[in-house]
Image (cartoon, rainbow, N blue to C red; front, side, top):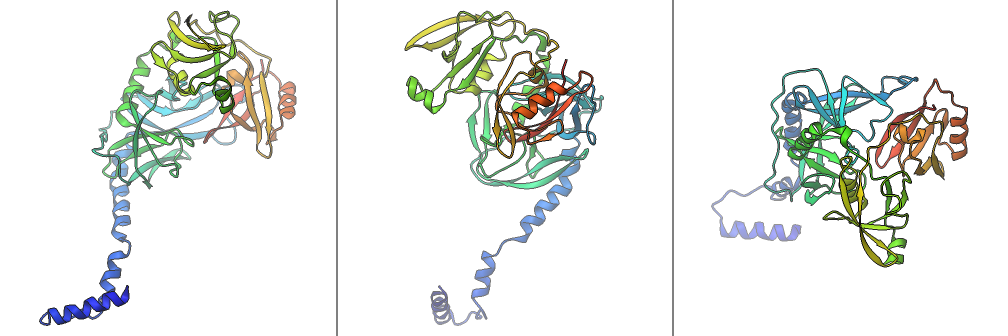
Length: 410
């Protein structure tokens, strides 16, 4: 390489003798290859200049266990929320059961997306610009929100190519990020010009950004819905495992694991049925099922297409009002050990204390009361010894999220 540069330099001196010679031709070439410090200075300047504008639309909320035990050490964990009305903010919460929100009152929650609308003290709605990209297919820097210890700040993060992909839980496309981007779910994302890009969802398996316009319209629609009107089909499902796909010859759909014997689906749907369509929607994954079957208003009838013993049938099922949360003295968990980590939840009984606390299948319980990395027998013993006037605090890992719930024995 250096011999080539030297040869070019000599030829240039012969061809253009009147031009002044460059003392060292290698230096300017290497200077072109060196990183531009101005890029990082630009990012620092962008954060400094845009932080007041972006942060005016963001609020920090403290989430803590509700119930007899009150809070735990400190005041709970902080989450970022976005103001989209003069008296309401939107945030991402895995569960709203067994928790209280300091600084706001829960108005609505979508268990499919985790989107929560929270009423706050009325204040002037700050101006908010949203970002609609001309092209998503190139790397970029963005500014992301960090919520901790009751405050919110912004920091620059490099993200790779964004790819528009449909996500059944949301109305419209989301922007899929590369798998090496590890931002917590619920993080708000801004461009370096201060426009809101959206909110991070899907970590750790499918990291994506829900566009700002979709996020705000979903929050408004959720607020307008009658939460009490949403019913239940009484059907529990799981994804098709590779083993089940091989046994049934089906590549899509969900398999029924349990039917509530008191629900209208009893006698029509049975465990091991494969459901591959809800009304006119094809069910490819469990996320599709959650999006189309867990938001059915009470009293509405839907049509399920099922596969059973090689036959295809269509069954009509009516959604029924979920029973009011009754006091339960049952823990209601089927569990297995995750060595060195804690206990994984395999099944949650309807109406049990665990269900009322918001514990779900595939959750990993990393602390249960006084037990760290608890074994199933330690969890059962701790619950059996618990009194009705004090909640057990349970640390839960769900995907890439970590939170605490309060489990109350009635």
